[in-house]
Length: 66
Image (tube, rainbow, N blue to C red; front, top):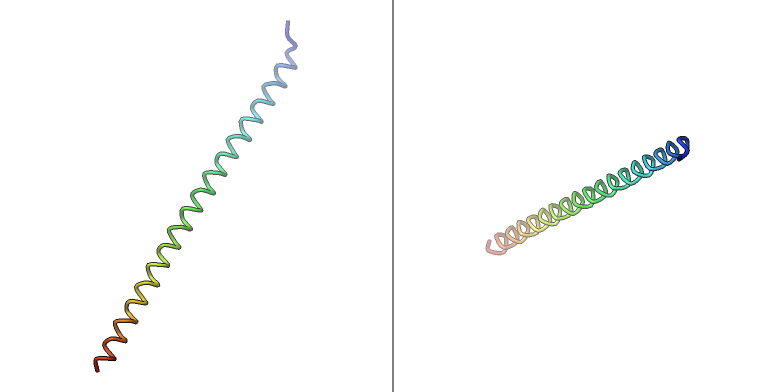
């Protein structure tokens, strides 16, 4: 016959381990989401910079024509 206290301790240990694993997975997912958001922000900033450069070039061309 097994020791009930030992079984309970094993269950508690398993639950703690499972909760830790779950928490780590959630943290990894959050980190991935943050990285994706940062990439999107960087891409948007690059696009804005390119648009500004194009506008400046167009203005320079207009001024040169004058």
